[in-house]
Length: 313
Image (cartoon, helix red, strand yellow):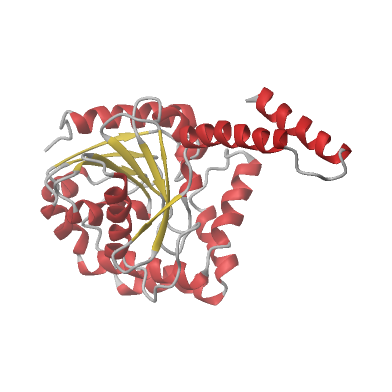
């Protein structure tokens, strides 16, 4: 590739010295560069677009090869970049798909409601577009609710679910009063409220630059999208919907969680086909970013557990 780039720049210099005429050698040089870079881009992943059920364009990328396909779904006010430490590791053995849910990253943001089921449609649209015959859906935080909805929409292809610091208790009895208190700071001043909300999920040991990036990035989310998604997600717990959803999904569920919040194994196993969890001690909500090596090993173990159907019933 270096030689191709040098050939192009040599052709450019010839063009400049010839008074701006466009020599054949320049055309040939750019053609070679286009072929070489095109091959590299195809190998490394290139942004693509699928259209969700409501027509919203959903940005996604595909890396590597090998089945089952791993579909990574980000959390609330995040995007596909939050999986950047997992793509190189897992694309060695699997086809890896990352995406931006509607209203996030580079995807469309024209919805009036950002419901979990609509996000599930986003994941289904991307899975359809990639032609993946069997997928393990991996969801961080709010992504846990999203992958449950996606699995319900494509029972013939979803072979397992892996939650990342999520799904601690699908019977959690959230009250309207608790929810109102939770979102009050976000309503008053979204940016400062979001920073305060996210800061409580970060470990004091998190590297300073990474910590500030997460806080700045998530607090810069579009408030209308973030507030709608938060409302839709939390209202499921007020109504008890998560337990009902999981009763329809007859595939193994494994979580890789930090230990900020306790896991209610009994509650989850009452409704899930099977459930187990791998807990990383003293890890926070963003363990895939700040505990990369340990997290990747744990996720690899979770993938093996799902494939063997080893979630405890």
